[in-house]
Every structure is written in structure tokens, then in C-alpha cells.
Length: 486
Image (cartoon, rainbow, N blue to C red; front, top):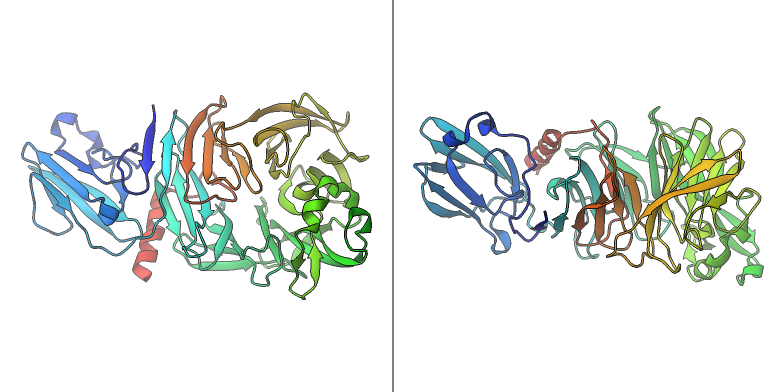
């Protein structure tokens, strides 16, 4: 089964909202009404919808029969076939009520903002219902967006932040966190921070690192309420002559901090002296051609480029370094590197078993750990003779091995310069952002493509909403509160 949902206003989709008031009655008593121009496709058992509300030439059209009448808002009842043209402000909602005899069925319609970006959804097979978050900006002249979609391709919540958002997520308490983005590649702009807001848009806290400008690549919530974040600590008088660079220049080194809710740093680790400059390997050409000017006005190079942080067990943190093509396991108590996966070979490197890839990683992102300690990552495959992939390994540190568990590809994706994510889904399967490609793919537990979501621009990450963190009703209430506050 395939369904396509066009953000421009087409009405092909599948019902996803909670059952309406009519669901308990037999079909013979249901009012005879059909409505087009809604997302998802109209179903009398579903009570909540979003719509373009007549914008872009896509009106809401109603047809009734068998004595059913329809009331739009507080207007008089109407029967037959007619068009609803609601000149309501962006984000406002109204009610369509179908009446037949003593029976009344109400359908809530929330109007998408006038400039809400277009999207396209293709469903290929069933998958366990859920929600996920994306953020994107189609161009500097267009507003940035953070959107919560469901697994049927319908936007459930949205927000346009005052700055671009590198990526966003819903935290375990139902709040929304995102990284401010100013297009500088890593932490150089003093305005950078992670914002945590309620779903009604209220700013609850701003999270930064201590000592240096925060970098937006990671905000990893821990069970104790603290977060792991990253920054780039500058260093001077680094000799890059043997790599074709200046003999005395500034470089930044990746630093990880665990920060509590009051902003106190409880633990920190820095890559200087732990990851040698030689491990940048083939990336030196890119690094040397991408010099940045720091907030202090100093020309600065980025030899490692951390892009994800993940806890593994009580005394280990896993970090992904794009510019070394490697993932590292760091012992928290000592700061030592326990193991290395990919990149140039060192004494800490694990031996790879079974991976068909000749070169292991190519600028990988989003290294994650499952409940068994297995490692997964979105492998961009940059400048490798293969497609981007999601790949997983089982580690045996006693034997010093990493055993290949499998990989996933989307045949539509051939290259991936940067960015991207791969996250497991509730009930099995994966949600994948293909990095520098405006496509999100979900795979079911058998590795088959379940859906594709095409966006107006690429999203750095697509992040599933944690189970139990929020509900559709809570997200809708948040939109309602923002609407009243305008």
C-alpha cells in the first residue's frame, strides 16, 4: 500500500488521530459526510485534522447526503456540496460539526501557518505508531521550522524559532530542546546555546558549556537529569607543518562536559593529548581548506570535529569524531581511550569482523548504544566507494573485536556529504535522516522501508519522541496556547 501526502494541500493520507465520538456506534448511524483538503484523509472516526485552509488554491470541500447537515464554527447548518473558505489566522482552529437527527460529530481543524513548508510522505508498509522531530530551513530568506511528525506523515506540532535550529528533540519530560545554529560549523558564535522550551513555546532554560562557546552537535539527556554537551577548546602554537599546514597556528580540540540543571560542570574530557593529530589522516586536506575565525579573531582549524556523545555503561562515554572517521570509547574515571572503531589504526583499534566495507567509515555521525552495548552509527560514506548506510556492531573488548551485525541503505541515497542520524524505533526498526539529503526514511523491524518523508530541506537529525514523553493532545494544547499568546 502506498500513500502520498503533498504539503501543498492534497488529501491522500491515512487516519491517525484518536477515535472520535462516533467510533462506538454502528456504521448505519454515522452521518453521511465527506471532507477533502484535510490531513490526514478524512475518516468519520477521527476527530482532529490539520489543513492549509484554502490557501494555495486547496480549499476544504464538504459533501453531505441522507439528511446530514454541517455546521462550520458557529454558522448556520448547511447541506449538500460546498466549499469552506476560512480566512482564519495561521495556526487557528475551527470545528466542523456533522448533524443528523440527534447525532452530532465534531471534527477539529487546525490551520497550518501560511508559510508552512511543503512536504511529501510515502507510506509503504505498517509500522508501530509514533512521533519524531525534524528541523530545517529551506533558505536564509525563509523561516526555520521545528516540526513533530507522526508515522503517518502528519505534522502534529510546529514552531518557528528566532534562529535556525541545527537539530531538535523532545525530552523525556515532554519539553522541546534545540541547538541554536548560525552556520559556523562548530562553536564559534557566542550566541550559541541549547534552548529548552515547553510545547507552548515558553523558554524554560538555556544550556551552555563552561569556559568556552558551546557547540550544538550534542545534547544527550541522562537518566539523572544531567546532560552531555560538547564544546571546542582552543589551543595555540600547534604545528601542522607535517600535514601541509602552518607551523604555528590555533586548533580547537573537542571537549565533552556533563552539566547539571544549574549549569555546574560535573565531568569533562578533552581530546587534546588523547587523539593524536595524525589520526585526522585523509581529512587534513578538508580541514586545512576550512579554516575558521574564532570569537577572539584567531584563525582556527578543527582537526577532530565531534558530532555525537553517548553513555555506555556506568564508566564509559562513546564519541563520534567526523574528521578522524572513527568512534571512540572513553573511560570516564581515567579519561583514557578504551577502544577505537574505524579511522587510522592505533593501539586502541578494534579488529573488525564481517563488515563488507573496504573502508570502515566516511565522516560518520550519530553513534549510539543499545541496551546490549552494541554500537550503531549513520555512516555517511563520504568519499568512499559505496552508499551511505546505517551500520551496527557488537563489541567484545576482551578479544578486541567489533563484529558486524548488519546495515541498511535507501536506494534513493547515493552520497551524503555531512550530517545525518540513525535512531531505533519503538517496536523495532530505524528512523534515518540521510544527512544533506531532504529525506527521512523509516525501516521496520525486518529492515524493509516503511515510509519516506521528503522535506523542503535536509534535517541534521530525525529524532524519535521517547515513549511516554508526550501525547498528541499535549502537543495540540501547546499549539493552542501559542495561538492565544499571539
